[in-house]
Length: 491
Image 1 (cartoon, one colour):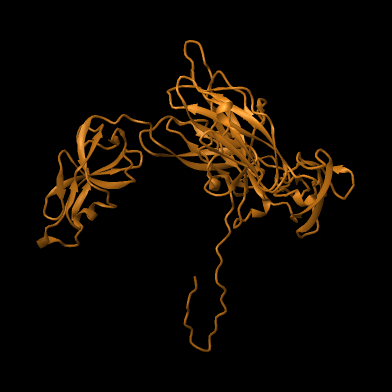
Image 2: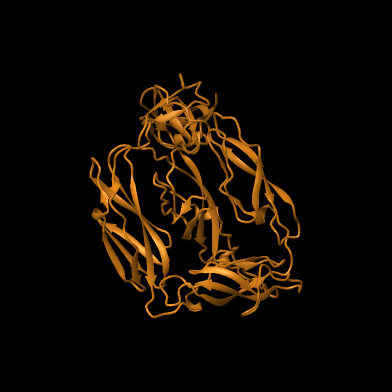
């Protein structure tokens, strides 16, 4: 955008077009959605608003070969979703961001008084490991040979690729096709079968896939370093790579280090570090150590660690008053207070104070506290059985005086009368009416309102279907229209 300013001589202006600040990429901005674990322990690939999923890992002891063991009761799992940071963000140079999410894995109980599932597809032997070459080589697998339907035919297959940088996998009918990308390595492809019957079990197979680069040795040009860094105090974060990253060295062939010297020069400096990489499967030198270097910018002075640097995101409160601690960009959330809240009947602003452990590399140490304002939604309410009619939405009562508006949509409410409806719930088709905090004409029967129609009632309804205001309004007639807004007020 440009701005034209006229200035009379002899005055002169020397102006620079303002530049919008570059935003910080955070877990909240990525907005991880639809991340689930099925009854077989298989993780799915979630959806993101921005960014690309690089990997999904877990420190849980029974997370192996990119999936969890089955459980006999619903179990919370902690997953770390590593996301590639796209260009255009202030932290794009970091390469990736790790976002922690807690997901509940459903139970797999197939017998007893209360099984969680029964019947359904089963596996038929195991799918052997596959090796394909780089640059688009593919392998087709007939899944009907490895899954057997239960009482109901198999209706679909879902596929999870642990490392999408190496391979792509798609299913057409009963054929799974695994195709390679441009780099070698090894990963797992997990496929699950399901049917359309109610409460039946799923079945899954894990396939070890190696992408080979025939006759080619793994070299630094295939390392694909991203992220990592070094703090002013010299704390090193290893970069991400297609190969396993091992020892860190300050010089080529030197001894392994765990940290670097602090930067006391007064200005940012470039630090080149050397990393021992283990050549992945698929290369002629698989398993051998290859030393590769990459450079980082080490900041000059220890910054102050505060709430803005911590980057809290994704915190929320459930209808039951349970607090979700969300995620944090830097530091560790050690506690929060209060631990929960009582249920409420309308949207209620709450303040939750998070205590955060300050990481190394900052001028302050110990902990800091960060208050976060959150809105607790009202508890789920019944839809009620009293029938009413409502109009379309308007921003204000006066907006209904600009023409004729009909209240004809059918709703139900827990309000026994229009005038005593404050705080009561509204539903449409047995679901909370998402009112958007707008005003609606409300009547027992279908009515048309506008100038000259007399007094009418209004409800202001929020997105949870809770009535926030009850008002009565009267539009002026053509002969005494005045300002056109009419008279009205809350009851």
